[in-house]
Image 1 (spheres, chains in turn purple, cyan):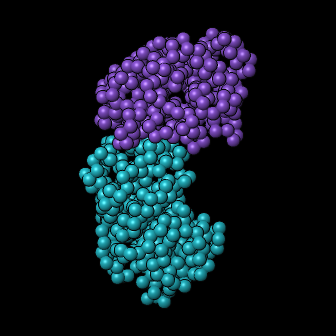
Image 2: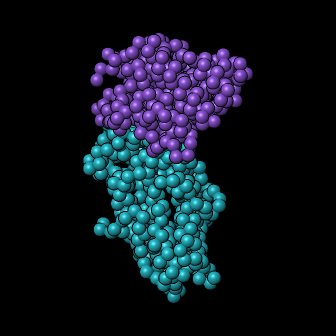
Length: 280
Length: 319
């Protein structure tokens, strides 16, 4: 299947990102909890991977062995993934309203045993890249050229295991692995630069032998171009440092609400209404 | 006197050696098996497999967390990863990775911890896995196996490769007496009765099985008839065998090379209290860390001897 030929226009992808953002806000406000702003920062990346022709998947056959893999290592941003999966046909869009409710497979963090199409159970930060590396190695043994995309948070980069995985991916020259660092600048208690500043990420990751690009991760053209470059590289692992804004898409609404981090809380019905109106 | 002498056992090799040989031999028959090593393959004996099947072996360096999560990823692609390290480093260092990358997603990963217990000797307490069985048993869906000799280890290795789901296989460093014959039966979750008796039952696993047989021989000289069960599978424990022992012998001694809490003793106590409450005595390393020293001296000092089992047996019968 030639995915490149099906690539939508940037404008079409931006429209899709807007749809995903509406889902993220609606489902988390309905749930009354969750991490909408952490999901919104990663929305362009998730949208481009799922709908920009970069991820080879079949939602009717989620376990298809030769599929590409997507791992949301920053598991708290799973609303962005659920929104994409619903739009991709893994389950009905109406099910998004069951997020975090008893009996729903749309758990607060991704759970492979509950929802087909989830590739890794995450939520304890720092493990997704290692799991993705294992999947890339497994696909290589089987002779599949499946690509594995792993989205991590910039706060998550504080986990030492991430750097173990970065070193090991270089050792095995895993050219099918692409890591995206959603550098939204905030973590639970405040600015990542205050908590544990690991920036700049690019030279650090590069020094492990990876190919690294740094882009504006909320600019769809830049995200698509970076993914095009990444999937074209097959002799070494690739990383995209996506400089983003937490809550991108509804920033004026968050500013008015007086909290630019808004970590780990749903928008009130009133703020959500404003956010949806702002998105248009 | 060496372990096994009193009960007339012949000497054998180390369980880690038997595992390494079995894994290499089984590699051809189980093409989905891959090895993930944290740079201790020459200690855990996965080295032989890695030499025979270099494309199916990954030495990821001294990084246990990464090692375990990589195995989880490989398993999600249909592989059967065997992850081997020292018991202490595997279970203690990578506990959350085992939780999140193996047991929570129910991945088919086989964890193998060598150098368990205090019998590793001179390297000292930092290298001694004495909490590993408790940690492994605490994880939902984990099967936990502690074989006692080379033959049962080889059989256990074959069995776990055919069993779907997470498994922890615990191995030791020193040579241990031979308990089984080549045609002996090994079924995961089913205890093996090695000696029958009416007065009490000694339930043991790992190195302590041979010690228990020695104790049973001593007790016999004192007119006490002891049943001996090899409880190689701690989880799921063979509850019918435990219940039958409690009902038929009315007293139990549990012997294991592990700390006092959360290991075989705890598993037996739960099974006994659920079925047929009878007095139980415990022989283990207690609630402490050991020290460096020669293995035999350590087993003596920290109470893992047939004499201690005999004492425990007499005390539990007196109750």
